[in-house]
Image (cartoon, rainbow, N blue to C red; front, side):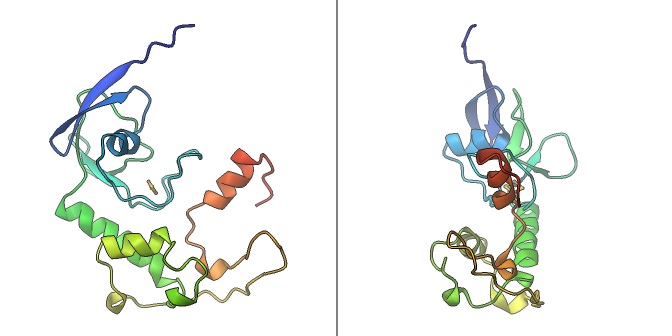
Length: 171
Ligand code: FES
């Protein structure tokens, strides 16, 4: 079986990027040193396209697409930074934060949190948010994890890790 790597060339933010065929637009960008915000994507898990932070504009389709679920194609022209994408990403983070506990400093993940970093990166501040906290009890009965649904952002990583990596599928 040949393991000859097929490569494609696309343009991302005006930069010529060579990528392995089969990679997603997000992977091609990250491997070329171009950062696209992303949250639900995890390198060990199948893409889900849930958080909408990795949106990019591609020449052709009128609406932005999720770069984590879009395969990179030869001659594709991709933009990762436009005012429209900025707006959509900030909106996505605001929607997540609207139902999230406001006190980051009381969270065990404080300063190690991708959501917090992304909110700062995208310039999302508290003032605009109308919060509506979910009334779920916190379950600390398991020694391996704290089950706190008030902090769930529906990225689906735990569910995918459970079924794809552990092969258990209990979540
Ligand atoms: Fe692509 Fe979440 S990283 S939709």
